Image (tube, rainbow, N blue to C red; front, side, top):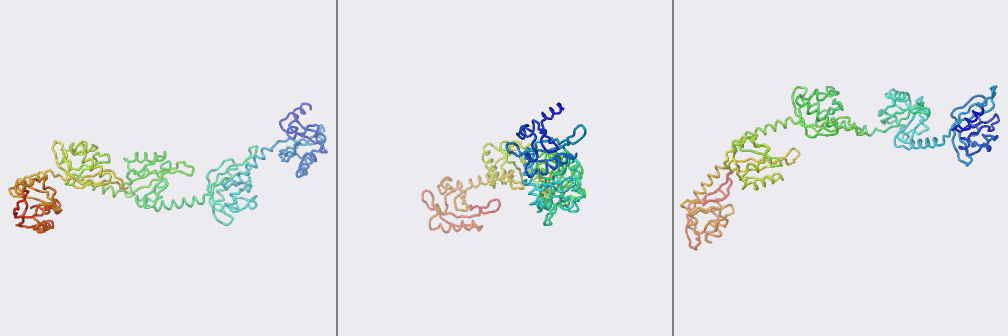
Length: 589
């Protein structure tokens, strides 16, 4: 007994005892520390009357009376008032105390201070009740025992209306009763469920969609005592997803998706129309293995793998084989697909059928390559990326010899490098140039003259990607023009010319000798105003104007004033002068 008394006195749990009259006869050190009363202060005092608050007197007395009748009580909660007036909560196991003959001689209570735990539970309860997610709980019978404010607002039922009611039978739609019951049953067996979607019926009869995490609820001994469900209202999100699904399905671009295994899980109507396979034909099938040509399998798989690692790809070209066996080309933007938590769950590809465009591009390439004019192109760095057959024949370099080389640095004479580079730079800013004359050096070292139209080259989005030059070999023409100029200059008749503004631009040697003015003195001057006598100015101007309209004049007489002031009479044939396109560019007399 001394050993037992010592163990009781030094135990780290409060232990007290009362006799059959309810007077304290056991009070260990832990009870002293907890309540603040010494053994002398409590011994022989009526435990219930002096240390239990009024609202618990009857309940505690009942526990003692039952123990005195041999009926013990476990886990009974009640408050004690400390000597300092603080209310503490004790979890009590009340055990019948007997003498050697088995006669009941009192009650021993082994307690546990649960004041801190109760405060924590109240805090948890408050957090649950004020959480901004719907939280509910059921006991092992499926009856509701937790229902927070968010659940109230969401579903419309207050706590009093749901507590003690069967969650599944009264608040779940018939088509989901079995599934929800299975989730609760699994949780009651310790198997928790994440992200389970199910509908709830609101008080007003509306269906709302809830995403549920169902967790087993356990007591202090680890025994399962129910299920707590933390939900999320996904009604609006599902509506939005349905809208997105509808938009994807009716989009006028082929859209498909694969999961992390590369199996098709999205296939819109445009994809169906384009490829010929229905959703049922492709869903769950491996995109690469079953629908991509062998030579592109590795490349397409690489694009999918990159997207599944978060690296998206834009403007990837690859072929698809239609159900009818036709090969078509798709330009693909491969986008990583993620769930609500940002986890990668697959890839979505938005495509564009470029079969027709590629055929057209090939046709354009063929036309450019076979055109009877030299055509070349450069990228934004000035490197050659277009070089047609006519350019090859003209300059002597094959496509392989020029592709990727700098046009200006390697094929333009030094005296024209700056001018040609300026034309290319302007075209790369969107300013195109017509009829620019420049020389090219052939492979054989000859100098040829090119008349160039430099055009800005743009991609489908309108971005400038280079310059295309359509040329004309004017080497022979320039030689011919120089021959004509020589003949005109050395003719034994005075020949002059004016532009469309009447300014002198041709003045041969015979004209110089006749009138006395050198080329430098007349070029750019107005012929009529400065070299024709006043009384003939109107008549000569009329002849020039008629020629500028295409009406030529023969044997027109008019006087010219020489440099020395003499008047000489000239018999004039006024001929319209035209450019290569037949447009009037002046008059030759």
